[in-house]
Image (cartoon, rainbow, N blue to C red; front, side):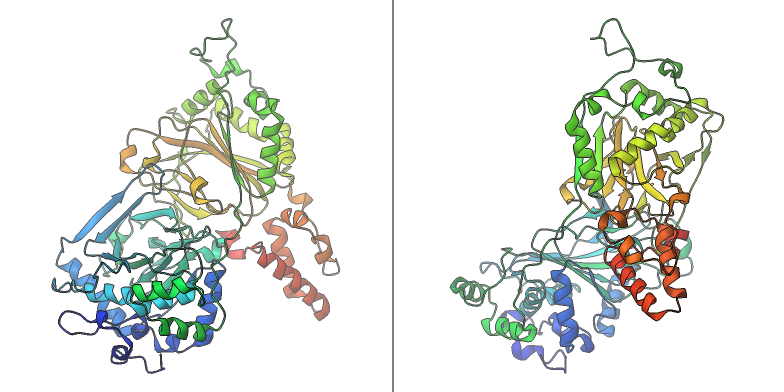
Length: 620
């Protein structure tokens, strides 16, 4: 298309199917793209290459400002009229990928099926139908295909979404071989109100995308495309007293018939394009525009998730070994002393099978998530559960929201300090025992000789923790001992592993289940909001971190060969946040340009491996 992008120019290249019943020409994306974008071949090349790498594309001021303002005004006007077409969607399902938001029910779906006439439904005088048709225009399809490498011949779903107080969308992937556009129409939003778009494959500081008016987010449905809309805060009540803040999104998903790239020399491709009213000349012109051939985006490797299912084991010694109904009635039955460690409480079945230890080591040393069911004695787990719920357990309510996008609900995760409770202190001692530290170091091969922090928390209705990696200071290993009883997956409260395959990423709360992972750039995880259906049940857990000993952290100077010291991935895995910050500081203070350049090259390696957290993240 020429540089003079306008509505009149679209009529010359549009087919007859792209006219409304009243003769009005339907625009395509080319007609509403900001002119600077539509005519910038280098930018479009960059978008194409980035999508092939599985990257989230963010384009600010993507569309014509007047068009974007008109669409936003239409949406706000529909709120003012209390349009009954807006429906509050509560999508709670058994796999935990819950969502809660308002959706305009006039959204439409179309495909390129020649038996479907999806352009003759304008007699309804739907104000939004014309906007839907922009994204469903044949030339829009051709742009999706040219940028993504998918054929984009399948169904197009166009949906308007409004996220009100406490609304959210849990981490999810879109249909395979599809392209997704999230068009942000939110005005005057504040960071601490939540509602962030979180991209699961990015490092913490770059993963959260603040709502920005007329910003387009574009990505393909690969395994790294797990994304979230974080819960909108109750603080929106206060904000709306002085501002008409609305968290508005227009979401378009374009599906494909095949994962194979379109090849120009394939005879069936010509038949397909003709059958679906897509002009072959346009496809060819798009290929010439982007020069490089279309390739289906390659999937990035995921971190492993290993689940070990153990049969329950009991500490209580009964003369009748078949009697599993009787459990220890008091904490004293476990004979906890200052020498009690994980080895005194762990399910013997875990240690009896050498394959369990081998699988655990391989998973953790590959930066994956290890899940062990029935990890400790069952009767101990019940007692640990009851300890948290005792009346004399001291709780400190915690709430936090940062400008980076990380947040917890205002009533989220009260932390049990234990107070004057010897039983609680005994559990803390179990995790912090020197033998327990040695065991963790054996499994993960990282320094765990520093302080061990153990906390416990209760998640109430609506409580959550948005995505984060736990990478702070000297943390080496993170763990979570879940003690929730009779919990259903559709109630939310799931632990979601951000860098794993979607089908295994959700680990909903199950009693006496232990989650363990090495803290690092790929350890992003989320706790999804608990739904109102969970009332009367308790989502509780112990959790904490094994830290490296700060005294053992590498003391570096500008004259040290840092690149050689950390030349292997294994040595770089030992880097703590403190050490990385120290290296970064050395680079900035160095007056020797040659040494500075060597440091700079090493810092680039760290950035490529996403091991370069900033000072702001450490503070948060």
